[in-house]
Image (cartoon, helix red, strand yellow):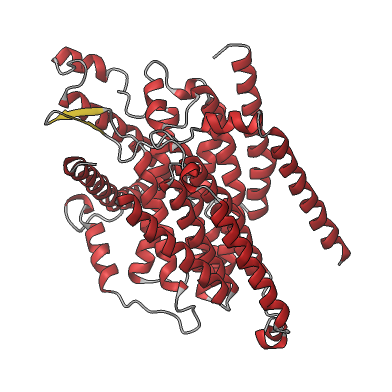
Length: 164
Length: 350
């Protein structure tokens, strides 16, 4: 029962904060909502007996990436023309098509997932050692691919910054 | 979870939080009297014996002062920022064990709020959230000094968090566990600092930067920035920032003790004293547990005093010196420590 109550509180918090990110006009307030959403998501991981994932979620997303985001937002005073992003200036039809496709994809994925299987063994969950062994044996190649992706993003960032 | 378990947990949370929160005013008193002692002054000595009631007077002053919000400040984030600062500082202590187990009413109670098997990561995670308080306070105040302080602090804390994290890896490799409870148990023979002296030094220096204490208190450097990120804050909101700083100090001192100085393991000499007086009954007696808590508190107290001592001894770094020191000296030393530890473990020295 406790499990469910905590789940619903965290889910509502998570979705509420995510909506706050979208609806807020002020980028810094949006960022704060995003941090709230990340923390709630970490709580959900904890509820699923994945404390390592929860801690990493907070350290990397809330503690490192979002801090940099807020830092950059404060450095660059974001006073760009608002009508560039104003909703009425954009054509409506493509927006709704993309939205429909996205919702369809999301629903299919949710229906296709076998949720009872996704919950790890309730008694122990995954320990750090188990995660590390999986990461460096079974999933070594995807792990290295991810690092390559980050490298590409890094080089891309440098190239974009150099153009100016 | 039975009702009894729940009661015990609640009691532990209430006990630890009240001890933490009541340590803050004592620390403020020690800070003011200690600074006076170091600078050959008297310090607050009029309110109560030795000025001991001075913090109480301060609290009353904080509570009754006007609590203004500047006109141009952000309505929503300005009052929220002190909480963002205080909550991570207060929550982090939950993972730190302050004693072994005690037996009460046929129940084994472990003297730790939450025995998380990733204790260190939990502390690092919530420690990294503390920066939002400063960042948002600076931004929401809409004041140039505040924002400069906040920018400085975020750059400083991001840099020194790397040092903090990197100096944790060495001890983690030596202990082979993330659980703070097990780490303390493993230090029964030798304290961790014997195996990881370099990690201790880099960790402790980075701890000063994480707590924004002198010589790294650039975010609030009063000669340059008035008061930095909390320029616009007054009354209880300022008091919350103040409390957050001291809570950070307590937590980081407790973490230093847990990782490098044997946590609640008895101070050398205390064990033989307890045995001589007939207190040390195996496996656990209540008095032995009390002695463990006393050892823990004494060790934490030593580090808290070092925090205060350093503040009133060293001048402030210049900003470029601070960054150069962090990136060019501390991070390489911390990385070298990881390499040396790996080598030592590979050669089976440890």
